[in-house]
Length: 398
Image (cartoon, helix red, strand yellow):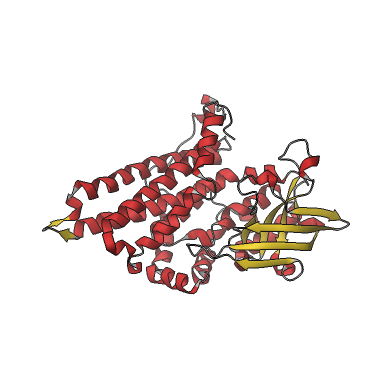
């Protein structure tokens, strides 16, 4: 269980209201250029939102967490969360590019000086994309320590064999953060040992032992399967120490959960605003349907849940920025935000009735998109297990 000295919290200040107002206004202006019609066309064509990602890159927002010394914006985590929240609140989707924010942290915190100097400025300038995160495998799923992809040292190279699944944006990325086992599972003292992180240059690897296949899904998330067949990568692709990769990945998970949960907050705000407006305008039986408690109350409850989740996420971001333990808040905030967004989505779809299924209203698209957040990047059940074991001190549930 995380323990925080009361004195360490005395001088912390948590923002309320619309913090980073200039950032919010700027992101809203960018998103106005990409209305629902744009996202619907993308789905019809199974296309990546290149124009949207380009606009965010040129604004500097995808480099929000890269320090200024590497040509980034050097913003705090809370500012990055605000960016993602506003993207989703505007009806857009940051799934095409959000990984660059949190995968970059592994390189920033654990990469060598040469690696950071080589890659971070180019990522900040938009010359390179670091969007792909190769962790999940078909047989191991969330049990990351059981992954089977192997990277074996051979002179000045590592030879990689294995398979990844649900590796989003691999076809639109220049670089991939890859987690592979460098020491066999049955040869390590702890199951979390023997895993290593590599920064793979996809441009060099394709056709030379790496194959990427699109994986169709219920949302246009540009996800793929990736196959490694004796792929040879330079030894200096290794980030940090060999065998310490699992710890490096865990190190970035709190930031990832705070950021993705902020997208859920944005989704919830879109659903609540959309539902409330429609319920006030739509008249049935000579009265606005929002006058009916069966319509009004689910929307109101979703609003209350969203406000509560937002406060917990703000606390998590404040603790993270102060360098204090925030695992409890990040996990619970992610769970509550994903559930608030889903409840808001359900209320919005129900409010629209049959029109909620009409693509032109964008409700069904957003409804499909926000459902993902209860599964990825971590499922609700695993968070409940975390709370039971690490916060409440009960026996491990698995």
